[in-house]
Image (cartoon, rainbow, N blue to C red; front, side, top):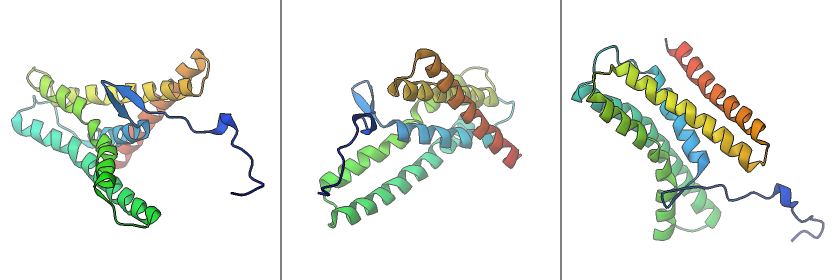
Length: 183
C-alpha cells in the first residue's frame, strides 16, 4: 500500500445504491440505461391510428425486447471479458451466474411496458396512444430516478424535485432529438 495515500474521505466513498423492490435488488444504472434505450426505440416507432391486433402487438413487443436484448448481450459479453482479464482466469459457474443476474436487469425494464401494451391492446385505444402512455411512463421514471439520486445526495426536498424535473426534461430532449433525426 502507498504510504502517502490518504484515507478516503467518508463523503467520497461510494454507497450501496441498489433499489430494493419486491425482495429483489436493482442497479439504478442498468434500469436507467435500459429505460432510455427502450424509450428511444419506441419514439421512432409509428404504429399509426389503428387499434393493435395480435400481429402488431407482437411486433411492438419485439421492438421493446430487441434493443434491450442487444444491450444485455453487449454488456454481458463485455463484462465477461473484463472479469476474465481482471481475474486472470477462466470464468467459473459462480462468475457466469453473477454476470447473468446482473445483466438480466437490462431486460426487466421491458416487463411493465409489455404488460401495459397487452392490457391496452384489448381496449379500443389506438396504437400510438399506447406508445405515448409508455413513453410518458418512461419520462416519469426519469423524474423518479432524478429524485432518487438527489435524495441519495441528501439534497433538500425542493432540490430533489428540481433534480427530478431536470432529468425528466433530459429524457424528453433525448426523445425529441431522436425524433428530429429519424423523421
